[in-house]
Image (cartoon, rainbow, N blue to C red; front, side, top):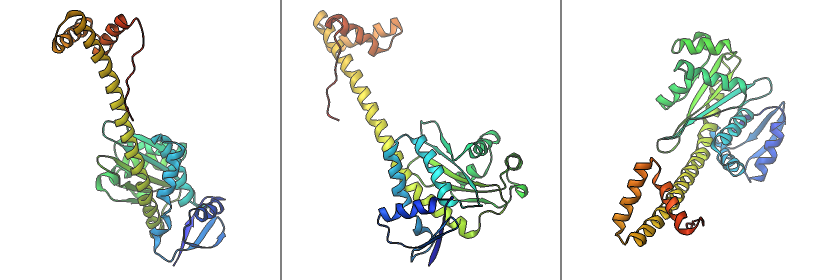
Length: 286
């Protein structure tokens, strides 16, 4: 079976080099008019098997989630757009106890994403809620989100394809493609975009898992450092007052409340008074 990967001008040649470097067993036939034609021997989605690996490579370049999403939005446009068929891409990811991370391939896509926040409606939110793709062939005829549709068409967007990102736990995300042409996404184009998004979500899920582990590590490190200072201060009070650990900690807590200071800060003052300003260190294996 012959599948076509559409890329922006010049991207096809770059992609030829990229896949050969990853050992992808595809027969690359030819590059023509900005389009890379490959014989995959399989159906549509398999041609994007390298996307998850590419996202992981982006993580190595920048572990920051927002920067990663920016790079992913540009990558999506490069892989799914073509010469004469310009696309715009917006991506948003929400995580528990974290602000929503949003990225876009350009200013226009960023503005279109913001319209959903402004009106509280649109294909992106609907895709997340329904856990299925939202394909709008012509926003001028869209009745589900009239305010959003009118504003989006005013900005030059006429067709939209919003696809949920299948992430882990409570993480939610969506990748939205916009086009300035009505009915820009054929059935084949929708299938290809969904295959790309599925693979991109796998790499993104790993990235978010790594970010959670880093947050946990940082939180544990900070907690241990705080605990060290408090324990040292408690020990100093026990030695000076010849009291129990509970009684020493009670002294610290009362001082914290009466001075309206954090317990760690009060403990630091106690340690500094005993150690003569010497710094304290927390020793533990990471």
